[in-house]
Image (tube, rainbow, N blue to C red; front, top):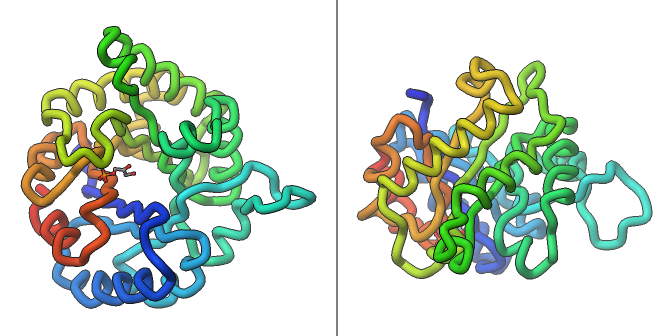
Length: 252
Ligand code: 13P
């Protein structure tokens, strides 16, 4: 708690290579004005080698997914080392769109988290309930299970860190975020779940818990001014430098 806040941009599959380079240049140019916020950009795999070298020290590179094996006959897959080779420090894992469209299970997510940590990447583990689970009153249970299964066997040794992002599936891309109180509640649930597996002191120093889902310049401060919310994961509003900087300038 009380850590430096972090803002992670997930560009998803929204930009061409040219658009990615342009946006990375704009973010880099303006990033000198952003103090006390860690900024991470997660472009498509194909843009990583072009975007990485454009970024100043203050802006880190992340990928949107990773495979758990180190090398071998896995057509189309990207190993953790291939990401560190591109200069990635962070990697999104278990995003709801991967769970939905690519049938990723908690067991697969767990293997990815462990593999990312082994390679020196910081996993940004994404969790969150869908609409039905919310309506059935299962949201806390669903998120607890997703977190517990994803970090099974994780110890966080040396310089390893972990980020967990709470992204309620039913608000992603809708323009309607959950309330700050809702996000704070789930951040507490996630923190308690983590401390069942990782000692509380380790959690305090090496884990950050974020909120994601329709974050914009108007609502960001309602999440980030809370001690238990260490930052935000941003989709749509990260695709234009003006809206992204609107967010960065309002982080509290
Ligand atoms: P939006 O900010 O577009 O709702 O997307 C959130 C998200 O999925 C980030 O990973």
